[in-house]
Image (cartoon, rainbow, N blue to C red; front, side):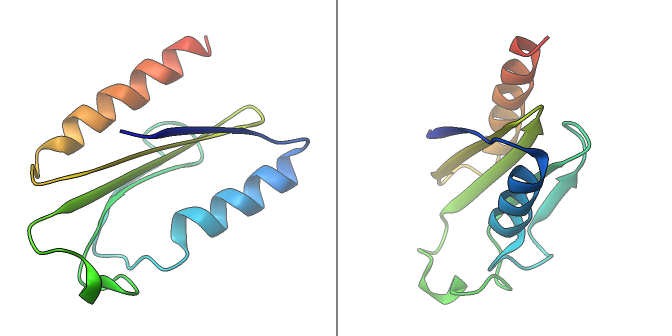
Length: 101
């Protein structure tokens, strides 16, 4: 499971990157939650209304959790055949947030 951590020089750069990365090419059907991990967070799974969804392997779930904290953008991704992986991803996100104090 890849975890990407980016630090930005200012809020505007962070916000622009977050807004683009977390919504670009994704449909609304796969949205699991917004703002459950702070003011700017988005948790989603792939769905048939995503751009390019026809190229996804059937039965494979692609999860993304974006979290903004201070000047950091945290992006956790996972792919696999377990639809229940969302609980695991959520726990990882909560664990990372706990490290920020």
